[in-house]
Image (tube, rainbow, N blue to C red; front, top):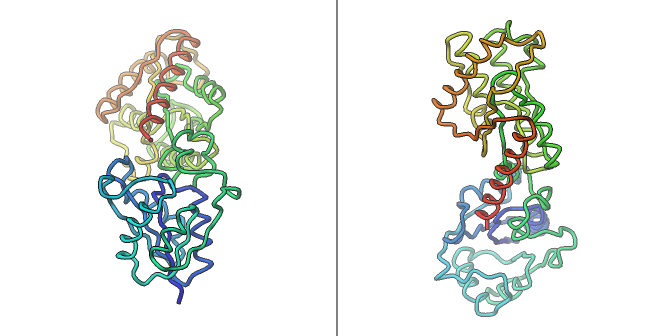
Length: 332
């Protein structure tokens, strides 16, 4: 019986890792995957394990383990070193005494296998099949986004929500930002379900909440890590409060889908345009107060956008660039 193992930080897990694991599975009877998590890294082992688990949830010949270590005790380097390989080989022998095959995509894999006195097989060491590495993903998430499995994409999707009362330019600004950043867009769902703001039911609002969450989830695994979202569940909740005086019952899945990294709130200091389907201006302004209260009650912090359309766009772009920069720097 061939028992193999692979190891790595999977920080993050990408399609090159996935292919290596599939290669190992094709060449063994049982495979152990070891996720090595340093005390200097910002993403916890259980999250990384969940990424791999979701990609191989139907595979019965695999176990996925984590090993938390201190860099002061175990050298953290990708360089091929006999001494570093010896230190790690001793730990791997302790963890996998029955394994007789090691599969890696690294040159030092042969060193480790020799110290363990087991066979070593290499997979795509030159990165010709999958020109990606975890360090490249960390440096440039946008360029290497489509090298990530769906489970990992959901962890790194950057969701930006535009909120506000009726006739404040949410849809126009959302589309303009999505075009400018060449990213994914989730349009306001309610417009396709509720034709007139003066006539709808609680069931309509629930339908909006469910469908909107579904559309956000679809874009989380789309072609861009950045998602611009026109309106979200907080506005739907506010409508339920404002019109029916009741709280909207929501599943945990809907709440998770609607959680975002950045919120903009569009001030109602612009001309009100009545298109025949909206509340009148007095009610629109009362609804604005309801929206703000709902956001406060749910501890949602937002950046308020005022002024003309170009001023709002420029301020949103500046805040978005700043948030993306900070998130990129935190993932190193």
